[in-house]
Length: 212
Ligand code: FES
Image (tube, rainbow, N blue to C red; front, side, top):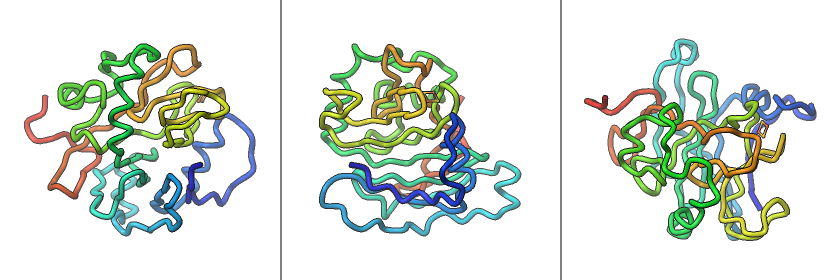
């Protein structure tokens, strides 16, 4: 079960855009903690860009030092939710077992991630194996999928290995944001441009120095 601390001041509306609208009406960064035994949801005070910077679509600097395994940090960049997730070893081991069920397991669509991410880990879709950075919008019609990170049977998939489920039209993505075959979403979730300023600091919106 996902313990999600998303602020939803709008709430209640039922349309394909509801998830996106909910995010856009939220005003601060939140953390979703997953898994039994994670009772408290720490608030990570790492994101505080100015309104002017947000308006300009400026890069967002995120401190991930407090991000624990299985947690998700959500920040906003260019009006989009950016998910930063620290994946467990079990999740990383499960990802390669899913390849045959996926539409683009090797991240061959160049529109969905920067080249340096694909070169680093095409199946993990990340610069560092354990840290996933994704735009949290479904590639079908833009809902914000739910994170269902536990490896256990789910009503929508008896062999679920963790991932993201979009309730709008039932698209499924794994914990690398790779889309399953046979769902409405046509492509993997987008990996935004980003780099590490140091071990605990991600800058979303800027490529690494020297990246093509
Ligand atoms: S918006 Fe249609 S499946 Fe996600």
